[in-house]
Length: 453
Image 1: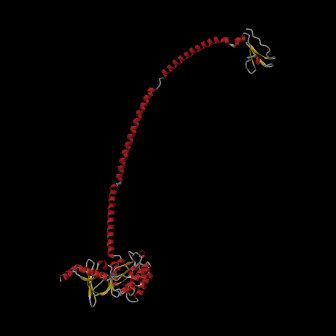
Image 2: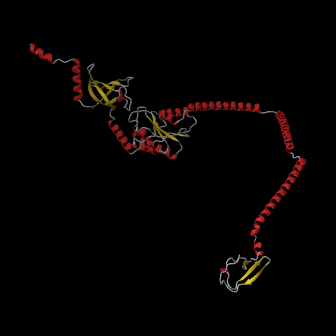
Image 3: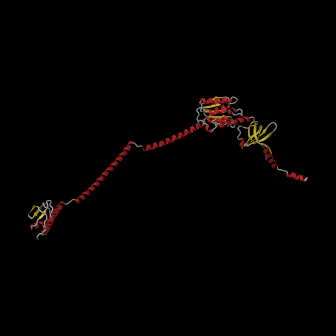
């Protein structure tokens, strides 16, 4: 009995341990699976998490869809909506509640449509139909706006009301077409092509109100997407509500969350433009007033500088009188300076003027002294010549000739100094004291005799 109790006690687990084991068994034993049911007690909290139940005729189960997954939904979950949810079966350990963690969700029965949607989206994306580089900017101030939608659609009334409020003077052109039904897609594409061919608007809105996936399916057709991509003007897609996404949204140049938002995107806000115009007007007025004020200040300054011609003439007359006085003073000063300079020059000249009488007397005295000095020098030189003559007399050739000697010279005047230089037949001049004769040499030197002394 005690042994059985010990064994039983050794197998006891806590509630926490039990719930943890059950959760592990559920999450490992059951892979992700799709569960169909009706939404009940749906609540979305401020945190973004969604709590609800899925039920059918026989049972119900609690579900939680966390914020990161709920944000990916392309439709709005609501009470009583039949859905298909991809779930992870788990247990909330704190309360021991069996629940499903929802990873994805779609309206029930639309699985095939979603697959077609994803396949076409992938195909057109690979072709580059959705490339951002191909997206065209919307005109800032369109001259005309086109709308492709049904004339009976509530979305058209919303768009027209928005355009009338924001830009009432802009022409609106409607290209009517059905927006729901089996034949709607070709007619929508035709309306888009018509707008492109007419080329009478600057921007085109393709829109319709919200609805189920089946209601919006015409805007998921390939023919509509290609018509939007080929359109000549920018296209704004405003199909369904904010959570609705269609192929047209990706093919358009810009997606609007609602038709009203599409109208706001393509139209300038009239009130904002009026406010901007008013602001610019105020700036212009302030600038004009500031410029006018500056010009008035400049005018005042110029007015103060501007003088009456009489005042200007009087001022110029005063200036001329002043200049005349300065000129007279300058002339008088120059005359005084030059008069003083002339006086100094006269005084200097008076000191430098020669005494002619005295100079003449001095000149006569110097002349007499010069004559006496010259006479004395002549007498001295004559005495010196006489003395020299007496000294040279013994050497006078004439005196030698007077003693009986003679000088022999040739016809060219050269003296004959040696007998050996005389040749027979040569003519010689013989110079005596009282004259000269010419002789011819008949014979050369024969014998040398000494002349008597």
